[in-house]
Amino acid sequence: MKHMYERLADKLRTTSALKWFSGHGAEESWIAEVEEELGFSLPPSYRWWLVHYGNARLNGGNILAISSPEHREYDDSDLLYIHRLNLAEEWWVSRFPHRLDLFVPDSDELYFFDTSSRNEQGEFPIMCYDLMNDLIDTYASTFAEFLERLIDEHS
Image (cartoon, rainbow, N blue to C red; front, side, top):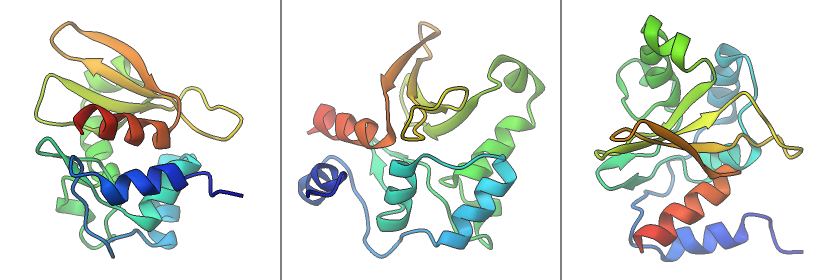
């Protein structure tokens, strides 16, 4: 049986749109620590990507990943660091109680996990927030689909 993320792995291998460095995967203990602070488990396809890749740049922005705990406090590509900054803003928390930022490129849109709903695989949908028009739409139903779609759109 083909691995469920094999198509994504193939795209990551051949894309020039997304830049990533091998050997930068997250350790299981780092992920567990982040999940403990968040209070929920991260989606399976995102966890797979964190362990096997753990970094990606596109359009001058980083897809948020998980850094080693000793670097987390000042790593602006760390999922938890960015989430802590967001949680410090009261207006943000009241407006976006279920938002976990995932990709904030230098453009008029950003992408986040909607942690209010999970599918049967344990995946959160990824929402695209169009900042210019203040519109939020579903972009992908899983992290794997999100990455594939980003690669396809920028290839």
